[in-house]
Image (cartoon, rainbow, N blue to C red):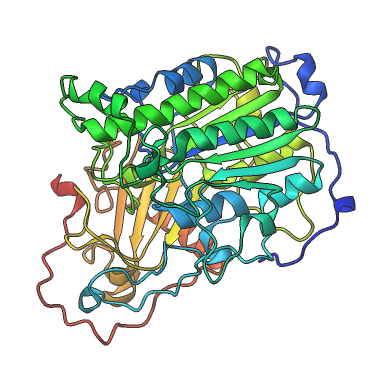
Length: 486
């Protein structure tokens, strides 16, 4: 794992990949500004363009129409802190050790069969973030909103590359009670990000707009709540407060886009919109299985839009599986900056896909690793107690494999793989809902992905839970819910 810092002189310009025929505007002669809008707990099915029958997201929908939607985009983890650590470090969890919010030992300890791997509460200061890399390349850098990496093992955004740090809720987490027209600080964050963009219009800038919406507790402007209370509920989505909070977030997105255009910055700014993890159980993600905190599709698949006038063809869609670990190398490529000295990056630049939707990525698979326990079972999850138990996951092509370490380590591993339920295998192309576990019927594909996953765990020195939990008593543990039963 990288630990060294790097001087400005070590960041220099490099050539970019060729631009597609439709993508040769004059703005490519200069390095683009980057605005990354990161929603909190926004699920794949929550945005209206994904087919919600109740929620309204007109500005996000407009962004999707004018840019590229990556339909198989994934978060770095099933919940906030580890996902943000992946995004900002450009590294999978085993390299930085951030796996959970707070602790990996969440839930009834007597029902945990293994001792979990201890968690890091934040990124080590020595881990060079994408903000530091862009700052060293001459970018102005700002974060507006949620950091969530400042625990005892972490530090502040100002110490990890952000020149400007603004979050109205940090000193006052109950801000909305005093300012009901600014729920979750959506509009304060939007105004601050717009002011930052205007102040840096003569130099390249990176603005991370990390909203608190739509994380609980849900909040909304009175007018927005009234709008959805008077609207007929949908079949899948019905909650007025959830819809209103999302509507306000969408309004903030629209205001920021409008300000960029008013400043004349929109044509040399790439806007990326995504979320940090899947939606909560307050909002069904069907046909995806599960929700926030788990590693079925509903917990990690995200909305993802990239908008860059003149470079990204409007109205395009791309089904390549991508991962938030890819954003660090993508932004380095956009900034024409070298990778920091000694830094290991696990992702691949998405720039070829953004410039040419027919392009292919070189890598074969993407990965997740969660060596602990997260309580509160999810709808259509595997487990009746935990959102997830220790698990590692690989997505390769159309296939996805889950390796559950309790059964793998304690119930015979590969020797009893046909009966110990350590492995689940799904074809996401034909079974997006992960309803039909094919581990027992397609053993060749199962073994291929399992070998790839085990090799990755070894290559990244991923810590694996191996010790039995002495506090485990096995009492009142219902049978695990097998995927094939749903």
